[in-house]
Image 1 (cartoon, rainbow, N blue to C red):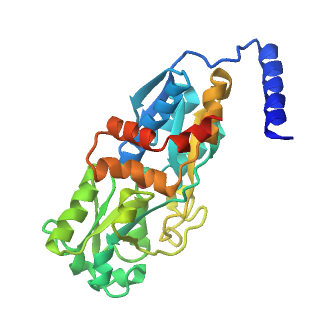
Image 2: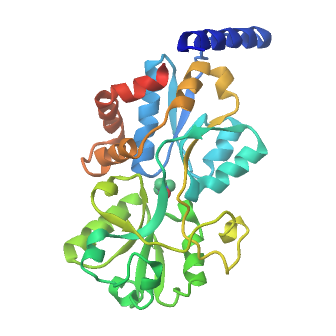
Image 3: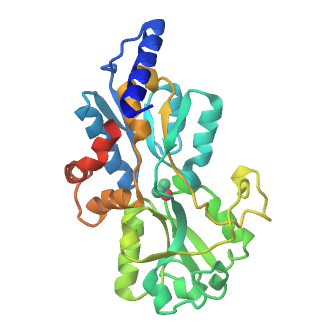
Length: 316
Ligand code: TMO
């Protein structure tokens, strides 16, 4: 089938289904509820997607939502979509809602992901802890990463505890590094970037949680290489102290939606399902806020204006 005939066939099928179920073909005017969380690309992308939906004639609404609880909220219909489901942090909450019913997997972005602790690359170039980025090099380097408040131990600045729970405390214990390092949970993502900036200005070694795609991809950040992840290695996923020393998955970035969204808003859902952002797209969305210091809405408007050919392709 060529593009026209497949489109015509799809339209005919939609009309048949619509007349059977008595639904109209057009998207409902009910607002599409888009969640915002606490890291930059996610919030910018929320407004990017909202802007595309509005361009298509849809109504949108934004709600600030907990990044784990959102999957249950989608399942129950209080939130319509999730556009950045990061495997390492949220895979379990996503899967739980998928299994319970009411939430659907709306596909995967092109960008592969990693959520892991690491160091600004200059720490490696200057050989502050010989053997990095292998995790085994951390043993004996605790004092290199000590801070004023870490009692002589190496500090690892984790993200907010709502992202990864006990993953890093368990990992340190499993790898025998908990005597030499302490985990500090950051209050928010900005604390991670502030720590990288001040440690770099002081020439002080630092270990922080970070992820890719992110604005730091362009700045030189190296993730520590831990024992390879496998399904079920973490304690929260049924693993044991023998296995929970595993690193984070080289993961996926998914989209999720309420199960009714394809029938209430067929055009918007088709766009959302087709929508796929690359590492570059997502890095740009974060950089507009974290480097260029724009507010999230202006960053989204700028991104949409500068990349019209990218998002137009999701509509056709
Ligand atoms: C979910 N995050 C990208 C902040 O790791």
